[in-house]
Amino acid sequence: MHITPYQNISLPKTAADTMESLRLAHCSDIHLDGDHYHHDQYVEAGDYYRASFEKVLVEMRNHGPDIMLLAGDLFDANSATKETIEWSMELIADQPCPVAMIPGNHDCLIEGGIYHRHDFKAIPNLTFITAEEGETLWIEEFGVAVWGKGMIDHSPNFSPIGGRPDRPIGCEFYIGMGHGIHVPHGEPSHRSSPIHMAEIEDSPFDYLALGHHHAAMKLVTNGVTASYCGSPTDTVGGAATYAMIEIDKANGTKLEILAVPGTETD
Ligand SMILES: [Mn+2]
Image (cartoon, rainbow, N blue to C red; front, side, top):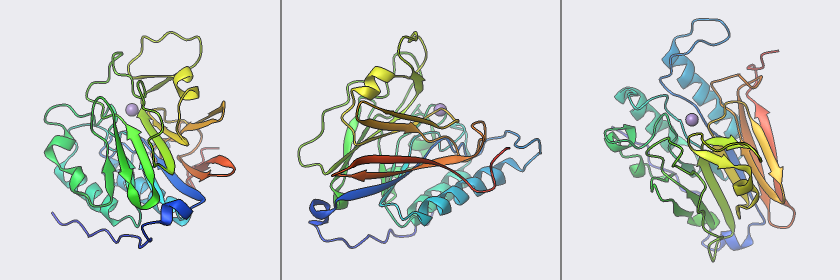
């Protein structure tokens, strides 16, 4: 397959030191190759999911993000077709900025799964987190550290943001990523891939990008900014949505959930 070479943004090596703010676009739960119905119409499923992903990428690019985040479930199932997988790899490679991604439960890292069949780490502008115990990867041009885990098994034993490390030395901006169920204070924790509110409140990230809930959810508390950005292919929250984030070193993090135009259901 052909991957278009990534056109690196030509920032000087010291740019991160002098950058006062970082702009992120956060998208999740795209579910490529899904087969659901939308707006009470039969839609050619593959076309709908691909078109919606392309559309949200255009919307995000219009905000001029420094980095795009894909917080899991890019694919609806590990049985996604080779054609769709290669199409998505080329699309990611075509984005004019770095992209950071974690797998979700639908496209988890089981043996023989998508990310074993196709080498997403070969996509030049993609920072792809796969370590089950968690790993910190760097997007050096911006002095950004991204931490997350590669989900293998969506089970109560998997803790998507459990054991997150403190802010790494030398990092200008610290981003966390997680895919799992939000567990509010006081609720039982028997569910798979739980992300407890207390863990979110305790987290050291400038921004925590979450995925799994298709209705967007802003979680801003105790000086921590996190969100489930919703899904570009599911309007369960009233529209297809994504999030835009501005991390400002002096003024903290600003978060906006935005609807993809034309997808509002009321
Ligand atoms: Mn999910």
